[in-house]
Length: 206
Image (cartoon, rainbow, N blue to C red; front, top):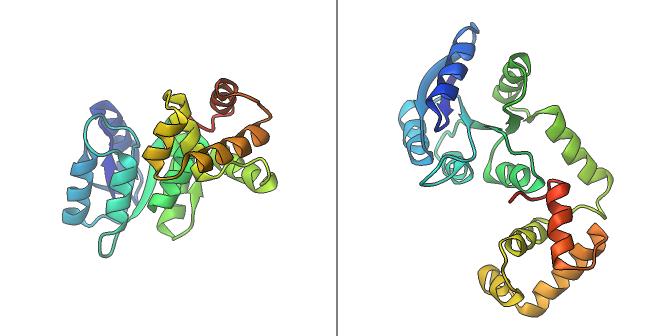
């Protein structure tokens, strides 16, 4: 299995390369330090799998790089490897085309197994991530929609209803309706409480 490593930290890439190269069925085909470089390297190297970080400084992030790579002809499978485990990050990564979502705190054996699972065409998730997704399905009435999460993130950034409506191309009345649903699901009655609750539950991150 030929793997492209994508992370803006050289030490992280070196550590991953050493671990993966020690496995007989893994070959590190290349490395990239940015989203743009990842897209170019993926098209040029044609790896079987891309191990993608989410946050990489300037330029496009891991989500956009995943989206662009997944749209390439004969696209490799993309597995996200990150420190972030909010609902928003997980859902966006999967929507962008990632077939796996792993946390950097995962032990090596778990990482190896997940990569082999992804290479076989199955979804690979770290246990904490799988648990969070399962909880969303078990309690759908409490799960926020992607749009509600986006509104919460704009709230956390200090945006007014008018600014949110412009940013999301929806009416202020629709924003208020979404907020009412958010308040009800989170059991709060104010913007500040909603943001605090969402951060505590790791639905969003600041």
